[in-house]
Each structure stands twice: as structure tokens, then as C-alpha cells.
Amino acid sequence: MAIDGTEQDWLVCAGSLFDLGRDELALVEVVGHIAISQHAVARLYERGRFRDTDLTNPMDVVTLWAVPLLQVMDRKGWQLGSEVAIPFMDGLLLGTLEANPTEPQHGPTVAIISRGKVHPEYLHPAFGTIGKGVMVLGINTFVGARELFENKQELLRAFERFQETFGSEMRKLRAGMIKGLPDPRMVERFGEALEVVGPEDLELLADTLERFFSTPEWRTHAEAHRRPTRFLH
Image (cartoon, rainbow, N blue to C red):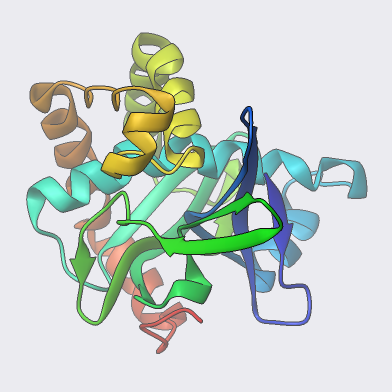
């Protein structure tokens, strides 16, 4: 996995996987369904004891949480702009549900290289479409432990319990996403897609997020810092 796009407002988490067969090479390139704003990185330096050597840490955390959070949002039918939180460095990375345009250059794709020829193909995105694009999480900012509201402990404990219970499954789901699953062509190449986390656990996570983002304190904060952009590019 890598972070790309330093010349833009967003750092896009993406992955490349090489699968070498007997007479062909497959290059699978996927988006991580996560984009981190440079504003969020700046806030990590200001509020989170962040160092240059820590730059890969937020990528690891947000890609780990991308699958269960997007499953929650897809299941609940949340709309563009719905708020999301991810635990990081004793605080929260905060963002919104966004959409990437459904175009091949945004992935996921597979390029089959065989006998000196390249055959690129567009894969079915791991998550459904919303608005005019594929569901992604846009991380807008970081709030440190000292800046959070009283109910942040409930949210952090819920995240901790979820990761303690499903940490292994979360890592396997991320690996499956990097392989281009659940596209049938990649299932044939790499094996069946993993089952999602149980619906009752996704419901609990969704309810906790909804309670956090419905507090008056959060609404005041959100209105003061809301980003107008609804699509990532």
C-alpha cells in the first residue's frame, strides 16, 4: 500500500499487487476507498505528537477500518456527507462519506501481461455506488484526546471492542480488498471473498457513530468546519 497525491489536497491510499503465474503476470491496482486531506496531516503534527517517521501509521489505520465502516454505511443507506470517525493516537480522525468517479483510472483495475501484450480490465468496486461515484471515506481532520467531547470515551471504547473482536477479520478483509475482491475474476484467481462481519455488530458500530455525531457539541463543531466538497478526484 502507498500514499500518493502529494501535489493535491488529498492523499489517496492505493494498493498494487503482482500475481505471477506460469505464463502471465497480473497487476492488480485498487484504491483503498480512503483519502486523507493534507489538512488532517497538518492537524496530526499540531495536535498528536506526530513525526515524519509516523507518516505510514494513519494509512495503516484508515485502510484497516475502511471495510467495516463502508459496510456500515452501505447497510444503513447513509448519504454523501455522512460523518465518520476512526480512532488514532488517543484521538479521532474525522471525515465524511464521499464518492470517487466511476472511471477506470480511479481503479480498481487488473492488467494481464502475457506474451508481450497487456490486457487491462476494469474490476467491479468492492462497495456500491453513491451519488455519481464509488463509496470512499474522506478524512478531513484530526481531533486530539484533549479536544474531544465527553461521549468520545464511549466511541473509543466501542472501536476498541470491535477491533479486539474482529482485528484478524479486519486485516483479512483489507487483504481481500487489495486483491480486487469480490470481483468474480479475482475470486477465480485468489479464492472466495471473505464473509462480512456479522450484521448485529455492524449495527452496534453504526448506532455508536450516530449517537456521537448527533450531539449538540459535534453539530456546532461540524457547522464551523464543514468542507463544501462532495467528490474526490
